[in-house]
Length: 320
Image (cartoon, rainbow, N blue to C red):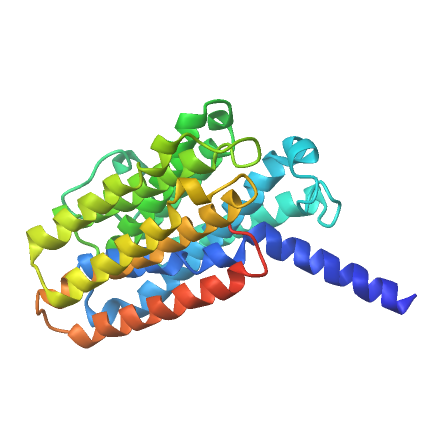
């Protein structure tokens, strides 16, 4: 009897892990670190930076759980082994946890934000900079829209998902309490577009293989990344990182070696490629030769660790 209870607990625990997709979680901190790097984060903001990383992870997990909750009826037919349709996680519990995580993110954002939130400024890029709490509020709205009205319009869902990841870059820059520079906005746009295009490939992963043209689309943001690296300042580190990023993603985007069974693995690897994009963005600041270069080198090391940790987690859990 005890063994059955232990096995049941193990299944429930694995169900929760599958809900939060551990391989993808390693891609989240890099958004904040890349955004903060592009905004030249000062040393006295490092503690606030870690708090923002925590908020970002909470919101990401809550969005994943809410997504499975809203998809539970569809998954009963298309993906019956998922945690909710399989019964390993109760729908009511998952919804409660998602709301709890969003509330916690709200609270932390409100506490650490030294500025008075001004909701009326949320639709603009104010000259004095965007506060952390404002970004949290926008992210929550996008998460709710993605799991609500956008579910009936696929392309809108892709745009909202990409916007969330691009906004995560801006989230890191918001730690500096300055207005967003062109480099920050451009970097956010690159990752947003990349996720939009990866989402378009993943849309039919349980039905049929997307047309070959879809596998060429992710090269568009990679081209934009190359322009960014070359336009700001060419450096051996930046070029090397760019080549590795393009090489990794190119090795994944092989339509002739992909089938519907492998597509979920392909999507997971493409999402993991976000970390390489983040590393390439950070190398730009190293090449500029600004003060605190050791900080940027340390960020690159951490992102490399996240990349390999994501690969290891991907062997046990799906990332799509």
